Length: 142
Image 1 (cartoon, one colour):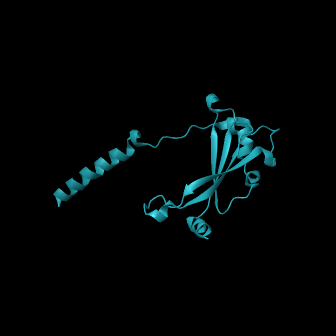
Image 2: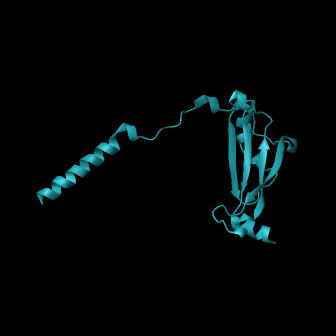
């Protein structure tokens, strides 16, 4: 019995040391604080359709199957809002939004706050349509 307690206490001590050691702490994202607060004059407003560009990418239907039928593709829709982008050379951020699991509407960007942050931080906004592969499969197979 004392051997069991010695074995258990050794493992317990090792567990406590490993979990309490600060080197195992998860890194934290720096807080931007006031930098991300919107200016009073910037309001969340409707984006003119001319500022949003719509593109389609030929996406592979099945990335994990190497049979001939897996090379079927579908057109994945994405939108880019670049009106305020400062450019890559200025280290301007890129905001990526993965849409709901349903077809994306052309005015979906109007319901997001990302364009407001893009104006303040000179960011590029990319919105990617994420729809279920089952829906895509039936649409492509027709």
